[in-house]
Length: 158
Image 1 (cartoon, rainbow, N blue to C red):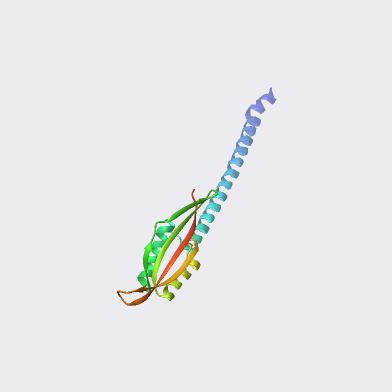
Image 2 (tube, helix red, strand yellow):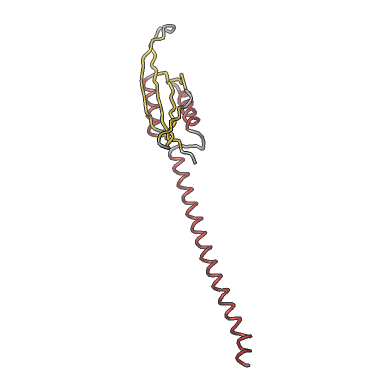
């Protein structure tokens, strides 16, 4: 009888508290894992943002970004955009590529500088084709340089 009363008053509460402590420990480890995961995700996001800033990528299409870049450089002088054609899409073995053909007119140095910046400083894709052609403008009675460029980029669809 004394043993039953002791169990009712002390031992049962002790066992309940031990169960509660065990559940709290499980919750504590789950919470620690969540905070570690949140910190890891924040670090990944910072890294992704730094890569976007490094490669000067904005949250837009490659075509818009390329056209903005060319317009900014053309405003600085030395060349003009004479043609910017609709992109061509190629699906090959489940991978899709976009080709952006355009023509620039101007001095060789200015066009060469733009090509260098496109390759080294920006990530529009691969410069797949470049051809220079010297044409005579009979109205102005001068020679002009045209450059036909094709930029290919991998189309990533989520």
